[in-house]
Length: 263
Image 1 (cartoon, rainbow, N blue to C red):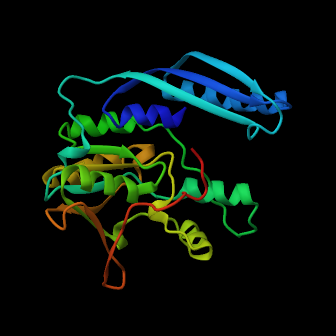
Image 2 (image 1 turned 90 degrees about the vertical axis):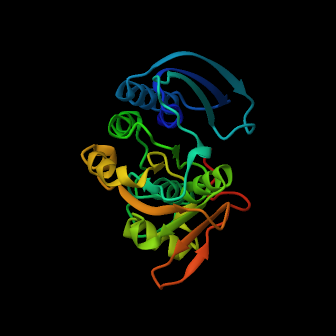
């Protein structure tokens, strides 16, 4: 629910209606199904959207991992909103709404039953209300994307290629929980590539960035919002990270499968 709401919201749309289709494996317990459906209803109610249609299919035992869910949504984009990956310009600020990597680490630890002393919870949340406030204070948001599969790194690489610019990140400015950072160090993962379910990346005019951050931090979904970098002209189509040790490294596109595979 939250993922589809956010897909609509980052295009500038106000989410209205969702569809839901389920592929259920033979033998799935009714308790599990009821728990999932109840959670979905709570999420839809919280986001103010209606699940208006859907379908179900049952496959033989072993043909699915218990339950596959597919959702789609419809929303309305207000007049005057023009959000596109191609609109990023040199001098723009790169903004995110909080700690990255929480969801990816939480799923990885839960699925693999890893005995790490880390209490990481998923960041799943709807972002449409936060984005509406952002558009109120900064209607000229250039680019906007929720950092799901492939994480912040993949989103910024897509922006850089689409707009023909370079994204320069400041490692010390990127919000990462110590528990997530620690888990990544142990498991050999880079939090920039981890999936999120309640985090966005926005490209905004530099002169409006600080005002935007101030407003974002007044919203529960944006309390840890930060400016994490700047758009530059070159090297075209790349993402660079200024590290805490004073070096610069290339943050390339994700190669191979994301771990864990979640969507």
